[in-house]
Length: 215
Image 1: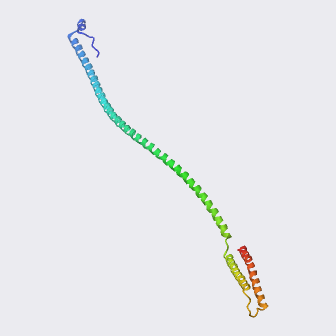
Image 2: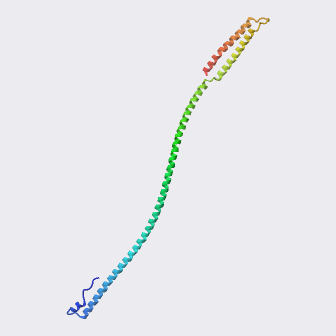
């Protein structure tokens, strides 16, 4: 605050200085002092208001700091919880990877087994095809119904020839009866019958071969 340099001693030393002038000067000094005091009071009020505003701002900052501290504590708790969850998830992932590895090994083994089974199936299929081809060849070599009939006819002819030969052998072994001798014509008929049976016997295989060739 500026101070007035005019003093009563200076005023009394003036040659024409009256009491009225001194009073007026004192009033002016008082007015100036009051004006200055008023200005200083306004400055003080302004500074007080500034201090109040700054205090309010500081209180607000303190409140925000406390809120931020609480938020940081909450975030720290969440981070800790997330860290625990991450640890659990990591352990579960490792266990899952171990299970996947074991299942992968089993799958590889099963695939190898499937490949072996497929190879065996292919080999068995080839064997079945070979056996089927062999069966078809053997079936083609089997006698047909015509061949069976021809063989039956041949067997009948053989049995008849054997019976005829047996009869002739039996007739030759027995003594001739005293009855009337057989005419030559009858003897020729027996020879013709034997020759016919021999021709049929020789013709039977030819018929069977012709029928098999035709089949």
